[in-house]
Image (cartoon, rainbow, N blue to C red; front, top):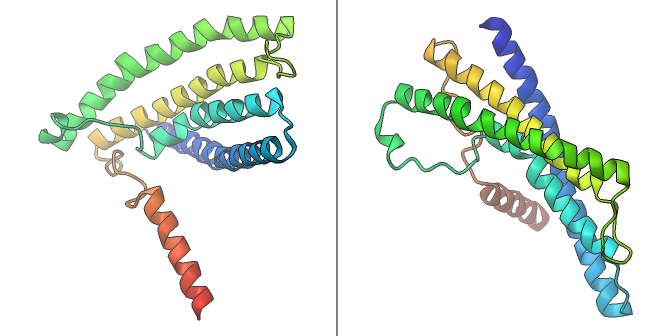
Length: 197
């Protein structure tokens, strides 16, 4: 189990790095969106490439950060029934869910999408919109994102088995107690207080 826990930490480190890197794509999407809106309104110039890159970036954030979100225990969970059981029972249900639902879903998506990505790459498929972008990079985000999600699933499975053996703390605890909005509000409040001094 020690070797598996080391593997889990490596996967977590990868998810953390990808998640932090991906967060910059949100800023890029916002800047491109704002720039595109300003150029359209002020100069009456538009570009399908700029519109498409926005949804490429959104797809990248959504798909590449799925494993990071799982690691941080931020995926939506409905604990109305499960919350009434003991922590060990909850962990066993999550193990079942990872093995029976997550892994087959990840494998199926990767299996179905990979040939489409390869076909789009080989054909050089382009957007049907004038001035649009090449398609295979955004298609490739699907198998890459699901691979990262599957890897994080392996890490979560290891942590849950380790918890049942008493080797680690509760792996279902959220990494942060405050929401992203609360953290942002605190940063803004601290800056305002610093500026007022």
